[in-house]
Length: 213
Figure (cartoon, rainbow, N blue to C red):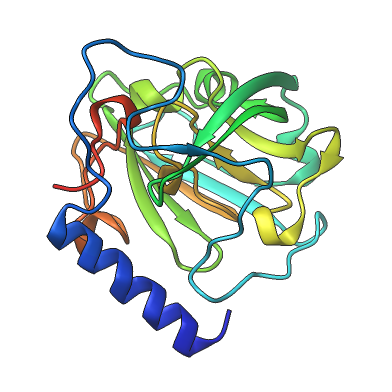
């Protein structure tokens, strides 16, 4: 994505937040497909115009803050933790959803069990190798299906989709599932990330239509 296309995308999404674009009447019950979403078969690629060219050899993850153990790990160190598999749906705030994605990687719960957050830790600030940032509640980071994904549909994650390691938090809109994962900071307070500072919701529950503030 060129700089002009990137700037146009950002401008459009900020305008959507101002206008409340894609919001629909809230249904009475909760179905599998969140309100306002449309199913797709492919996996659209969205980013901020830069796709870091990382290999497993030069990828690293740091984590710190309100934890008993901080880390600075490479690929091999991460995979000393037991691996997990899960199947979950993707719900992007730009209105598309994709069912039955098969993931493999390290569950958020497994990593957090190693880090041992302090009782005051309530949020995880997330940073990526492309300078993207977002924040999620710790409860969402360790929920079922949340993981540091390395594989999709049985194949290593591609560069375009955040490989070698990206975050997957299926119960939230997909802007919370940061690509090219680089750093985790455990803290007692929320903080706006890239899209949150541009009018998007702090949490992002698709079934509640928490698209915007």
